Image (cartoon, rainbow, N blue to C red; front, side, top):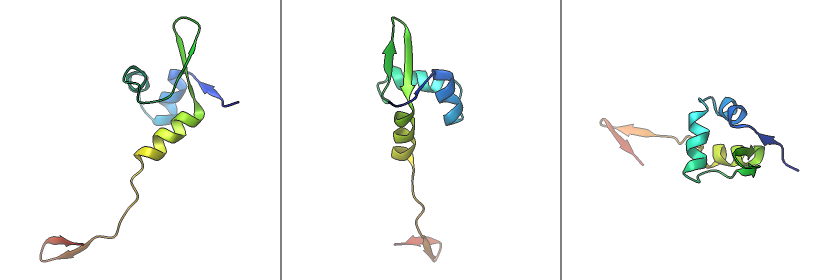
Length: 70
């Protein structure tokens, strides 16, 4: 079973305040688990997937005459 993180633990992993993961949950932009009436937990794999989906790989950029050449 995947480890479940509190909102504060998820925020620490993302390097943000707890407000950001709460917003992700409210906007349904990240998977979460409801525990009881008011508690939510975020699976560790959901944090990893969120980071992977937002990762932009570097590309080589060439310049010519002050403009990017593709």
